[in-house]
Length: 226
Image 1 (tube, one colour):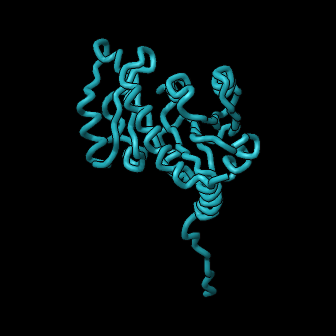
Image 2 (cartoon, one colour):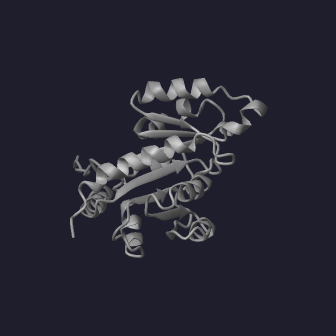
C-alpha cells in the first residue's frame, strides 16, 4: 500500500501575522497608537467613535478605518465629524485582516496622527482570531445583548485589553446583571480594564477618553523627532 504524505499547515494565520507585524512596525515608526475595536452588530461601535471624536477634539488627532460587509454608512458618519475615515467592505467576510488594513492605510495621511481606530466587522467570533497589527484590542458589549456573552464567546473577552459595557442607561428596563458580566470578564482576563458607559447620555466616557490619552502619551515617546 502506498502511503501518501499529506502536509499539515501548522498555522493558517502565519501569512496574516506577517502582514500585521508590518502594519505594527509602520505604526511604531510614526509613534501612532492603534486599537482594534470589536463587538457584535449594534453594540455601539460607531456611536462610541462619534462620542470619542467629539470628546477628544483638540486633544488627540485621530483617523478611523471602518469595516463592514456592505455600505459606507459608518465611514460617512465619521467623516461628518471632520476626521479622516476609510471604509473597507468585506463583501460577506466576517472580519478584517492584516492585508485589508495595509491597503487601507495608503488612503490615510498618517503623519502627525496620535490615534488610529480600526472598527472591525460586527461579530464576536471571527475578528478575535485575526491580528491586524494593533497595539490593543477593545471589545464593546451592550447590556441589551445579555450578561452571558463573556461565557459564550470567551476568546474575544480573553484577548481584549479593554471591555466597554455600553447602553447602561437601559439597565432599569432590561434583565441584565452587570456584575455578572464583570465577573465573567475578570475570570477570563484579570488585567482587563472595564468601562461602563452610555453613548447616549455620555455617562462613563471620560474614563475611556483618559485611557486613550494615557496610551497615546506612552506611544508619543517613540515618535521620531523632526
